Image 1 (cartoon, rainbow, N blue to C red):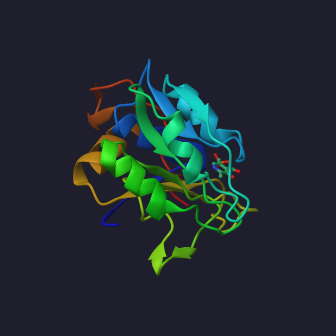
Image 2 (cartoon, helix red, strand yellow):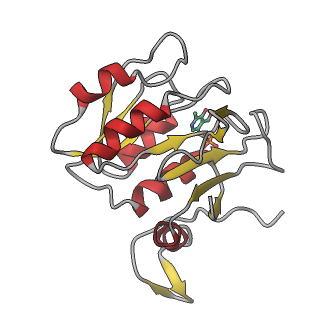
Length: 184
Ligand SMILES: Cc1ncc(COP(=O)(O)O)c(C=O)c1O
């Protein structure tokens, strides 16, 4: 991924990603319930509604066989979560998503360094969201997170949302948050 936007938690990484994709009221995001609450929480914070799909036994990730049935005309993004260092079946998930022009946001907060067919989890969708909570797979000096993407446009929107929607000092272009990563 060419762009990386550092933020102050994994939840913030998800929230900036959803903002960048234009997620808002009336949207549905297909995700899993078998994750930390933050995945669905970020979706609701963005104004959208989580639509839960069951996981599959082999990967503990979103079951691609159940994905199509959950997609509606309101589906704005798909948010699989890679748990226990085990990537969800992103190849099949992407095939289904790409055929409909729906972006995939990866919850990769528990999959640092994991690979699928030689490609890194978190680099298999439009945006990959990592976290650096100290007791997790890769800890920071305090809380932290990062959202990675190949799209300069999505990265620019994430960087805008992170400091209160401010690009130029005291000029606030959008309603954002304070998601700056601590300097340390
Ligand atoms: C899969 C997953 N996503 C998101 C989060 C939220 O990360 P943070 O606690 O850094 O906000 C967690 C935290 O445990 C997580 O396990």
